Length: 337
Ligand SMILES: NC(=O)c1ccc[n+]([C@@H]2O[C@H](COP(=O)([O-])OP(=O)(O)OC[C@H]3O[C@@H](n4cnc5c(N)ncnc54)[C@H](OP(=O)(O)O)[C@@H]3O)[C@@H](O)[C@H]2O)c1
Image (cartoon, rainbow, N blue to C red; front, side, top):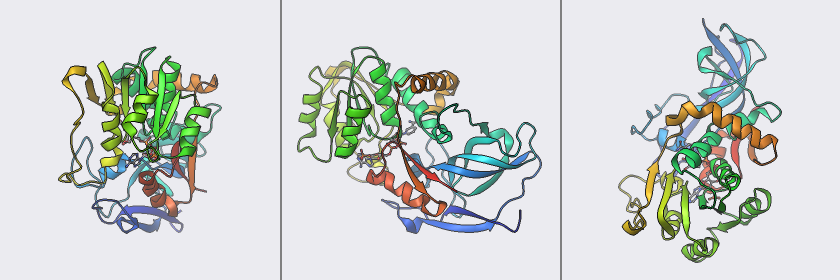
């Protein structure tokens, strides 16, 4: 297949502050030939995720930074086109950590079969994939969600937040979501069964809005955004409450010395709150349990999901940049023909 073209996005230069199109370059290369034990995968869906902003920074966190001049990585659902790996054959649907590219030749051992049953294959990149798993372990293992809790979720209409809130609802909690548009808050209450939702871009006093929505205070805060949204929720934590720190997207485009990079300034000793950050991969041993439960809830109609789908590899950076503008409801995906 060496005469055909594979388009792939490379990290051209590292962003400072808000990333822009200048940071990416679309490169054309021949479609690779799979070597021994390799599989050629054609991308059907690729996932753009907030954590990618961290990989663009030249700093080690829990993962190595991406190199400039190299293709950027992404969770992908794709189809095997050619296989030199025993156990996979042309036509198989697979998922794995591949690239922002149309094709990839990779060792078959890093791929998993896509096993989404009756639901679309794209769900392997959200509700039945990494974001759904993150919501599950964040709520159950880190947040220790319990019936009767009042649970607040920020970034509530996103891939992780929307699943996290529904898990809390299924667990028998009062669930309050915070999100950035009227369309999103309506979706949370009308479709997903949240008890209340707050549009943080519209309210004048977010702390007062949280107080209104949580008359018995907050037992568990599932933190996705950080910054001022976080401040407003921390004001209302109950004694012995928990904060599951999943992410802080509002801070991802700030440099470490930015004065807005302040700590959790409204955590009071009197509440004896347990604040715990987590990374989903620390809980990989729970993957089967989580996927089994999430799938069952979908089948029973208890768990709903939404996708925002951008078409074409050429639009992948736009889809990624849109995450920081709140352009997605549910999971932001890129679909390739
Ligand atoms: N710990 C882990 O293992 C793990 C794994 C996956 C994801 N995460 C984290 O989980 C969070 C959600 O990830 P996701 O994949 O589900 O993304 P997502 O929520 O689907 O998309 C990002 C959303 O963040 C909101 N946002 C963007 N900038 C914001 C700002 N300045 N202030 C407030 N909200 C802002 C936007 O919604 P609005 O319209 O509501 O503003 C946007 O739609 C991120 O912080 C991510 O890093 C953590």
